[in-house]
Length: 178
Image (cartoon, rainbow, N blue to C red):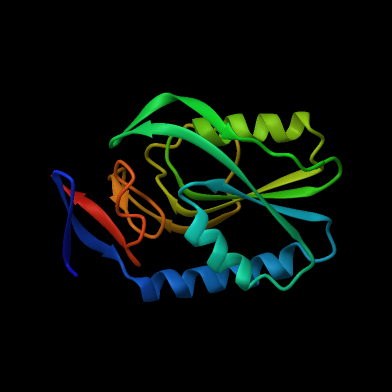
């Protein structure tokens, strides 16, 4: 599929499922090497990261636990500028290395709020992993430790990312055609 229509928008193929698989596998190998021996909790940020964290976690061979946090900051194709917590973190993270797994990082506002909260809850260190990163949009305070792909500041769907709830099931990444 070169193009897909979701609601009133057309999207074109951007990153193939094969390229995603290769990159996810490489990131998992790096994490396995870099974080071995730590007390680790992977924290998937829902809804968008569910496909990425599932594929990534299948390739994690080091001892670790996994949990999820559900936040909302988008309405349609635009960020609202405010983050709403829908499902919170219930685990005790004091002294743990928390690996925050995001589908996409653009402005960094959501990430800043997550990191502030994790530090307040006693995480010993915080590692950030994202499938997609928009460096031109990023205004966050924390470095990104593992990046799948750097992309321009375009709206994208697929592989967990959506447009008003649709498009998450696409196996690759598609960008909007203006």
